[in-house]
Image 1: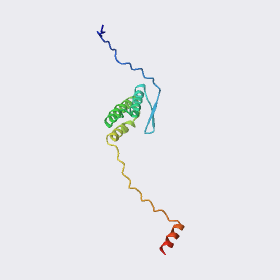
Image 2: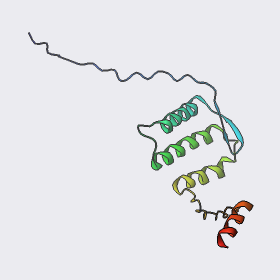
Image 3: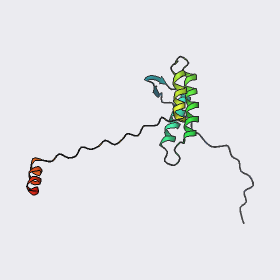
Image 4: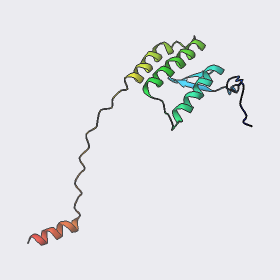
Length: 125
């Protein structure tokens, strides 16, 4: 006799509760203690950037950092330096600064040793 499933009950996926570690980050030399929410976002960011399967693209970077920095700013209203940092950081993600290509330096010609000069002088005679 063939078994036929009559119903399927699904309660969603199981996501374990995040274990808050108390991490801090530094932005422009200022230390900021992360809350459970922002720490979970930061850990997710690290996992995403280390992923070899699907590393973040520019759009993901910009969107994630916009939301992450918005959360950091909301959690730290006294950190006024974020008012200038956030727009410039997001701008640099959208428009990465280009590095000027350095012209290769001319390598100095190898100095001839005294023996080589003497050999060349004798062969020219």
